[in-house]
Length: 405
Image (cartoon, rainbow, N blue to C red; front, side, top):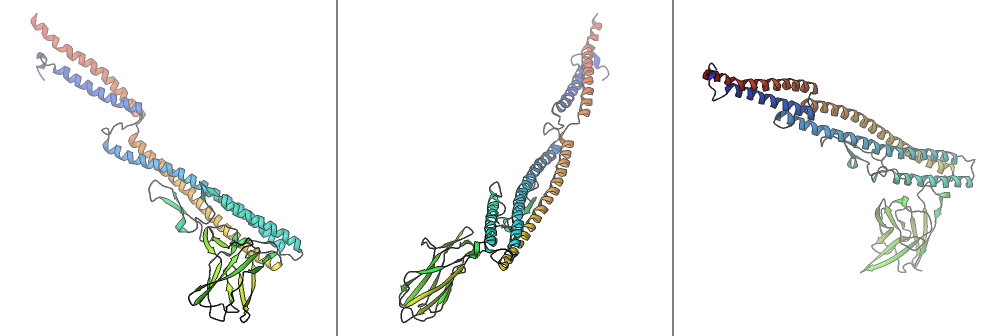
């Protein structure tokens, strides 16, 4: 650079000072922007690799935050189910107490009938609790989450595979009162024959088909049996059906699915005298006939499938059923408690993971404010000195004017 001060067409020293000042300004702007935004990376050019990593960490942190919210919602859902089970358990304990009381032969018929009526009311309340125990229109105690195939899947992590499944053990997820149904005085419903019997019956072989039904869904009361026949060529088929007091054909709804009308078809000829027909709901029909006279009579008896506390033996049987139901509820409460505890551990783990992920993101993305302030102060001073030096560099060529005096 020797002798450059005598060449004034190009102010080399001034250009160097200007370049230095511009570099200082750029650095100062960079640190001032970091101080303004609080972020170390404000554009992809600042740190491309760091931005890529920080973006992934941010996405995982947000996912973990939602997972924490999901876990809280899941615990709330299970808390509702637990509340319903606790109420059912309270009812069952009371039913056990009343059944124990009814088993004592010091009680009379009227006292046992009163207990029976109370048990019916308590039993109805169990069904009401099952129906009302819901979360976001999802029934929790009706058996819909019984078994692994119908499990509730809680999203407890930010990845698709990070789920936690819950379901009641098979046989413990449906809390209906059907197994605990009771009736006053163990009423036996008498059934009477309605309609004319066929007149051409002869002794022949009979094939019996029994309709599958749900016994617990048929209430006690008065019913009737009707026997009708149809002729198909040389064969005559007989249909035995059950009708209620209103004269309507009885259908059984098996847990929401139409099980069809109660009836049995006897085919391949005429009715065989003495045949016992099972309609599938505890109704046995014994057909007896004097073939020559063409007359028939039905010996029919139907006993309601529910329990009774009308005697020591009946109350003891019912007590056993109640104790079994208490065991089921207790088992389900245990599963609920274990799941809530597991979700609590999961919540702590996800919270720790979120904190650590946020810390890693912060180290990459966020600015160290103390360091940035220190750098900004340094470049502010350099900006001032660079400006002063540029001024001096612009004054340097004026010394050449002395040569022309």
